[in-house]
Length: 487
Image 1 (tube, rainbow, N blue to C red):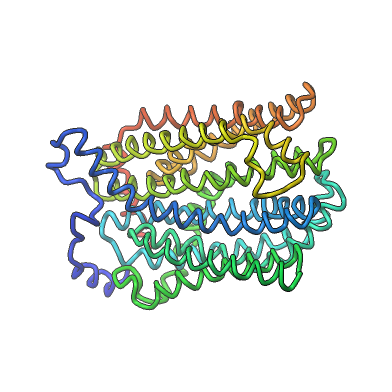
Image 2 (cartoon, rainbow, N blue to C red; image 1 turned 45 degrees about the horizontal axis):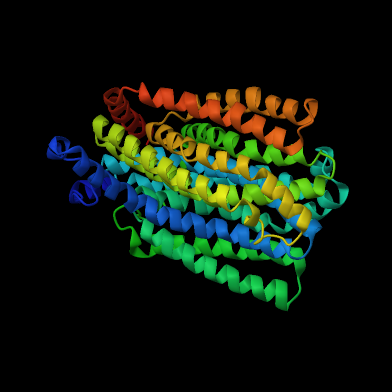
């Protein structure tokens, strides 16, 4: 860090109790109910706006898929493949790489090293933009790749056309994800929510204009996603550089180009950790595309994955909230606070997961109405609803435990766990149940969630329960010192 930045930080007043990440000593002596209430308030200050912003952002994808679904089964399959495989592959990697900021910015904010948050974000922009350039062939050659993976020719060709039109969306991720984590780490979550609401309203209006009025079809839906996601980028960027973050944004800095290799290694570990999870369910869709009557199977599974993706925005908000709370507490040297934040977050997310599990079991026949009027697809979705309910229940735990890993800097270890559970156990088991036991998409999905996701969740739970949080707090102090030396 340069001398000017250090002087500026020394003049910054300590944040008050409302924003300060560390539990006060007397909080530790209060009743359990009172402590849960205090921690829940701190958690929901992050999670509440994060749920709203993530739901609105994901709703853009859902609205796009709904518009495409009412154009026809082929259009629904094409936009589903483009969203869930091509964009999903890319989304998972870049989102994971940006989550390195949750560790660095969260712990720096907890240690009151405010100046470095802006530098870290700019480094993330550079690393993610270069990654976007390297991933560009994924969009340019989507059609032949999908055919090679066994997708129906007509679906692969239309998906390839849609993917090319989604290249601007691809590059928006490089800026949007770091901006969101930068603001989130310093508890600027209300701003994220408001910008997301504006982008969603714009998305709905432009969808109506391009699809219904101008009759641009499935290409119009891709154009809409591009426009709406760049509204998110410029909204968050405008707030940041126009005075919304005076403590953490000091303008563009040449320091952003130093320590890039160390930053890339941490980003890569974070990317591998999250993208292995994200790609897991994309593989499920690709495997389903090789079944008989693939178009209906892909449509039904894509509807279920979209509903699952919609609901998982809530656990992912807890992923973000838990990562920030744990990183803040560890950065402030408070291991007990980090442990308590973990317990409260996991318990709250499980309760919400049980609620949605019950909801899906009750309304299983009506789940697909918003996406399609095709009777075969409606029936297929109803048959898959039990697996959807259990997936949602498992996902109420697993992302929160991953948030603990991000807040603690365990990304590299979790990446190995994900690789083993998902790809050495889950995918082979899904393949065996789908083809060898002739259970089709039900067997593929069941094998993957009970063979992969359930085991991975159990391992993460054991690691979290056995964690020595005071040692983690000491490691966080050494971690921040190391990154200060990198500067």
